[in-house]
Length: 285
Image (cartoon, rainbow, N blue to C red; front, side, top):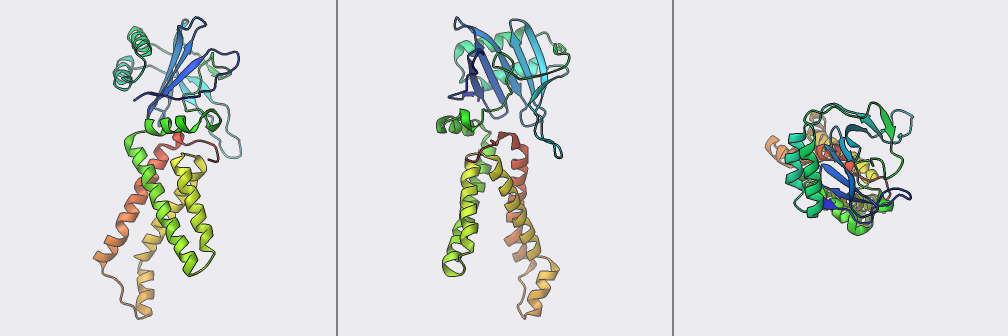
């Protein structure tokens, strides 16, 4: 469901804009000086091959968003709009009606009306590439970074994500807090070195809930370590070491019950973190 983000940064000299976001779409609406709607941009498929449909009084344009990802030693470039192919107006109209129930009625009617006017199968009117420079041009269809958000709008972004992704984040943060507690307990009973692990996992759990990129990367490392440790615990080498020490190894059934669920859960969380990597923000907290 499209829900409005608060405190969206207004660019000096550009048109006033409002920003709405769902799990996989962004809607940016620009206003004219008299308060009427000047135009809009509907960005969709944010978790896959992101594209943007833009309408202004000059007409429609349909573009693919090149996010300028960093490659090799090159830094991330400024996002670009690149001409895309055909636009499935019928499918987009159906999708918009599904996710726009919470929009202000005048915006919902305006956008749905323009989608209905879209010539089916129209080619992009943008022949090349252009760079975002002001709010009067098409802004990138992603949530603003932390400097444009307050805590309330961050919660709005979190609630706008798909339910299974929110559940994954909460589950991951809970697991990291449990591990942090376990390391803290070992700190009291064994070594103060475990306090570093506990603090890192606690901060990482906070970063996951606040959807920041560094926490995502640390979580990916932690999840792979869980998988490696679990697989190592059921390897013949480990079982052989137990037998050499005179310890009877657990049965195969017991090993599978102990280690298969954590591996499956870790793989699922890795999949979610990879699928929704664009939802995480470049900030510390």
